[in-house]
Length: 331
Ligand code: MRU
Image 1 (cartoon, rainbow, N blue to C red):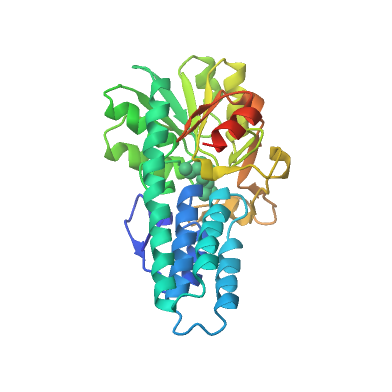
Image 2: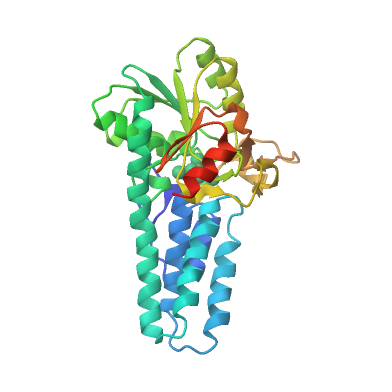
C-alpha cells in the first residue's frame, strides 16, 4: 500500500500495488518520493514481485528483471540502489532454498529496511536536535519528512525531535516547484504536529536570510559523495550559497544509506532530468505559453564547502568530510 503523495494534502488515498510494475510506476511517477522512501518501496516491490511467483522456474532471470525494472525508475536517490543491493544479497544467499522460504526472507528483509529506516531517522533526530535553539527559525527545502522516509523524517526528523524536546521553533518551508513538496507535504506534516510552519516561494529565502529571519537551514539528501558533495532537490545549491553569504549554518540530514562512497565527488552523481512539461503546469492549469521550452532538473549538487555538517544516525559529520565519512562508515 502506497500513500499517493501526488494527491496530498487534498486527498488521503492509497495505491494498492498487486504487481511489482505498479510499485515501479509509483516511484517513477512520484506517488512515492524521497530517497529513503523510494528505497523502502523498491525493496517491497522486489519482495512483491518474487512473492507472486508460482515456481522457481527461471528464478534468477525473473529476479534480475524485477530489479532492472525497479532500478530504472529514478537515477539519483542512492537509497534505491542500496536497497536493491540488500535484497540481492538475501536472494543470492538463499536462492537455493525452497521458494516459499525465499519469499519469506525477502519480505522480511524489506520489512527490516523499513523498520531500520524509522530507527535511523530517530537517531538522526537525536543527534541533530542540539543544533536547534529555542526561538530559532529553521529553513527547509522540499520534503525530507515522514512522507519521504519510513516515518519521522531526516531534516524534519531533527525538527520533530527538537519540538518533542520542548524547543519552540518556527519552520520556513520552500514551496519547491514544480511538485510543491514543501507547500503540499512539509507544511501538511508539520501542521499535523502543531509545529508552526510558514510556506515561502522558492525565491524568497535570500531576502529572509539577509534580514536575519532565518537562523538555520536543514535539508535532506538524495545522494552524498565520498567527499560530502550532496545531491538534493533542485534549489538546494542556491540555498547553501545564500546561507554562506549570510553566515547561516547549512546542514544536510541523511542516513548512511544515502552515502555513495564509490563516487569521489558530486561531479559524477547522476542528476535526474524530468520532462520539461512538468514545469508547464500548476495543477491542471498551463501557465507557460505554447511553443516554449522548459527544463526540469530534479536535483542539484551542493559542493561540500558550503555544508556546515551532515547529520547521520552515527553522529554529525563535519569537514574534513572525506576522512570523517570514511571513519564513520567503518562503525
Ligand atoms: O523528487 P523527490 O521529491 O523525490 O526529492 C526528494 C528530496 O530531494 C529529498 O530532500 C531527499 O530525497 C531526502 S528525503 C529524506
